[in-house]
Length: 127
Image 1: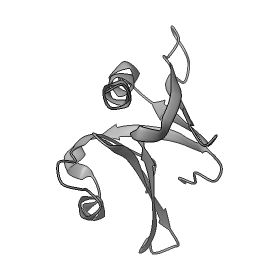
Image 2: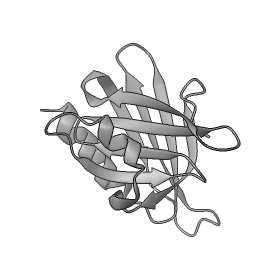
Image 3: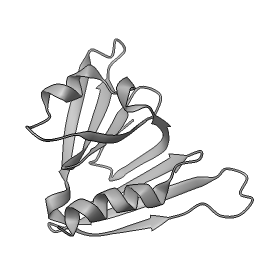
């Protein structure tokens, strides 16, 4: 479950951007592009060239969804942690601190290029 009130999203697995929920396109502004996407069992996290969008699918039917936006423009700093050597359960992590004190933590499973995600964030934070 994606719930930024708890500051953390775990077990994200990379998906092809063509598999992003159709609802996300209605939130995109002119010139905004989807760069990368991840999912849990039902939820998704989408990295665009402007922000991070999370989709929290709720309820038994999954018809109710909560969308959260984390803009790159207010990031104070971020930290990435690469996976270790020969870990039993390899994962990488992303920690983001926003200017208002809010923090978000993401844990990615499998072979995720965490440095690419760091570069995406750096590209749009350090303009």
